[in-house]
Length: 87
Image 1 (spheres, rainbow, N blue to C red):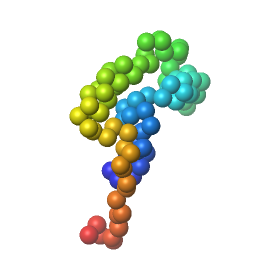
Image 2: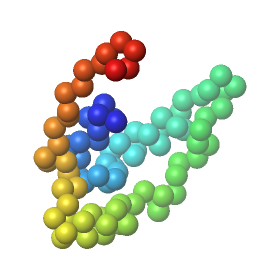
Image 3: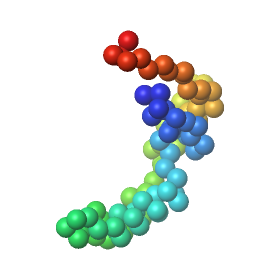
């Protein structure tokens, strides 16, 4: 989880917020890249209403009002030492 957290934090738009440029890149990739059978994940562009941060924005506002750090500004990964045998 320590390594996964490094992929999430800091979250400049707040955790769970979807960056519109990243959405566009992902949708384009899903429409253009063929799998081994020659098919794509998406056969058409997603509907305009498929992209929204409305619910996330409301949730982040509620959490921030309660003092929750939704952007990970205080995040620092913990130092992990891996030992042979898992000890």
